[in-house]
Image (cartoon, helix red, strand yellow):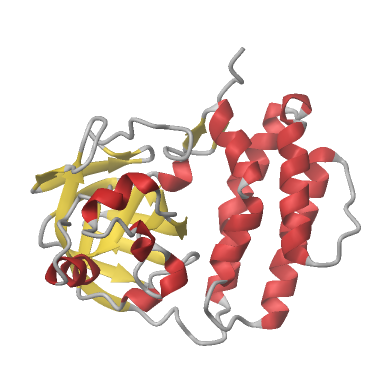
Length: 266
């Protein structure tokens, strides 16, 4: 029997969404710390806060001292016990999760919150496949871009994956190297140009048109993206290679977006 949906503020999580969010706690933490010098005091404080939230969720203490291992273990334990968790308690946890993660970025030791400004150059939608079809104007709600949906929902479609955003410069770099890739090929539904992509990282905020969204994590490349590279090496999309990754976003303010709109990362 399918797990019931969980309403977390303005966002609706299916039972699978909530379960896989818990399973992702370890990787989400790593994404927020990846390749950047963070304020160690803030990192420790936020890590402890996230751990306490998970411990309260399942009334369980974890003795692990390494915060990444602790969050991973607590998330997996909570996922295993999800059917025993009060839906209201789970809803509150999901609501608090993303503002807690955002605290790391707001106290960034390298001042990466300094804004970078660019523009929207592509909006792409598809009912179930890639490459996506380009449109000039779109409506964004809390579920994502209207008319856009992923066919495979196991690893996609969480509220914190409502938007997938990528750099036009990175796409052009791959295309210039002879790879058969274009806007929308790798599944992104918003393409942005002229923003310093090193600033586009988990915890930051993106604004475009009348939409506001929080970056929640990097999109992990999968083998379905191999066709966009002449040698099949889809790992070129990985955040492990630098500021080249697509990013996922949670919509915090719905609205509309058009090609040519200003985009701001802060």
